Length: 356
Image (cartoon, rainbow, N blue to C red; front, side, top):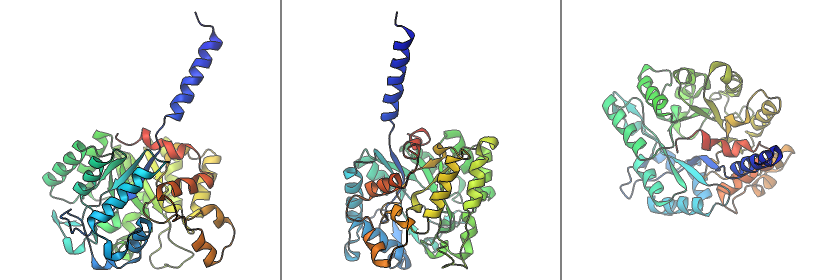
């Protein structure tokens, strides 16, 4: 019979092995497409000629004249496969705007079809489906599309409330929430101030407020709030809603309320996001927020900045030099957040939360 020391040493080895086997999952990667291949994707003229799409193309190293479904898809797949830091990336679909149960195509600035992302996942074992289904679809249609995505292996569902014109407190969201709670699959919801599209601006910006997801949490949904901080010192004062205080308050009280609440920090590798990251680090250090509630994402293919260097002042030329565009964008985001000192649990906790 083994003595207690041998048993303890064996347990310790098993525990260490389990830790080293935890997967690193990027829960927030994007893809778009003009729809030229019949992919079901689309983008408005405003988005196509706007800064968000320009940044995506820069990250993908694709010129604007080469921005076809096929080339974008190939670039995304190549980047995922080439990453040495991540085991999987959740690539996000984006449903259109729905009104009275039907697609409002003219108001849908960007559509990324679920089928488009399903195709990526079928082609690469490193891609996970981040499905998107608008809760204002005709009820039977919504339920059928959710079921189809679940059967296709969706790891999570995603909303961009301001962009999709979804009020998370609307009663029409309840059947959607009940399905997520029953299936144990998370809702990744963009929060804070987002300027990706026109409809993300003043008229619908309040849909992104973190506190509006309390209803989903009370129902039992796993909610991941993807916090975006874009106030930039008052550059956009008419649009700014800084929900970091709301988010932190909710994270602190999550255990007490029995909420499965998490925060995705993918949008915070930026000059305007470092103060939020510092606050999250302090909350973790003071044991007010568990590190497992903070999840890694890259916001791929947005170019990554070496945020550690932002702790001191820099000229615009130095800032441009700090753009980490030379290598793999997934690896750059991973390296930047580790160098910034984020807890190791941030990079591995998603494996325990997503539907895999």
